[in-house]
Length: 352
Ligand code: 5GP
Ligand code: MN
Image (cartoon, rainbow, N blue to C red; front, side, top):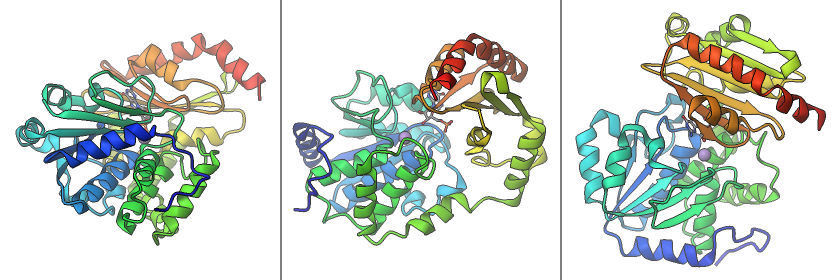
């Protein structure tokens, strides 16, 4: 069994044993993840999906709603059930499961409309996640906010269970995609040397990491690229004295550039390129709600900002929230919130 001793056993060994034992004893396994699945959500769930399928298990993967086109290259995306497309079929699958994996989210609410069916399902539930404050509905909880992606946790689970040799290139690709996207291509949350030891183990499975980068980040439409240019030049407010910047897009703005889901992925990161900006916000008018994304640098807690003003949360440096009301209201709440956080923003900047 291959286990490099420089990679620590982050998941308690008895938890690894309990998960493998539960898998062994389950007949109908369902894997779930959060709404608007991102690279880590899909990467971690697909890796587990392939692993279980190859272990001769009956397994389904249900995501709450659709995912962006630049993630469709991952093997197995055509086998994923989308709850929103057929809620009654998905409910049926959930209610007949004897084991449900909950990956890359901490509480059922993060699965949107799927939450009720998830909570009422009688199956055993296993959480594998890296967000703060895990809920209490799970039979087994693997919650590690210090780990930068759920995909990394899935790799660690396989490794610790002695399954490294069993892994294929397909699973390795999904895991790498999740690790890469949740760290912005290893530009944040990625100073743990073990991340790079894990990457080296994934490369030994013959993944092409450069091709994966291209599939995800060099795959945008011309309209999306022009929308980015428009947003940066016409829809950006910079608050130098508050070390903050805002990007915002109304429905009308998006329609002008034939918006497709996923087109604005990553926009929120750009203002952090400006010298002296440590807090970036992106506000987008969506169908029936306003969606917010936050990114910060160093110790500024954008998850606290998201929780206080937009009923949201997430990680210290990457979080999100929602507003049910008008676009103008959301902009106003943001601007007021920024004033309330003035001293914290300045303090963080002073420490640099
Ligand atoms: P993104 O900006 O990429 O949509 O989200 C970044 C992170 O913020 C996600 O990984 C997730 O942890 C968190 N997040 C995004 N939207 C929400 C939300 O509406 N509520 C909560 N609690 N967290 C969110
Ligand atoms: Mn994640």
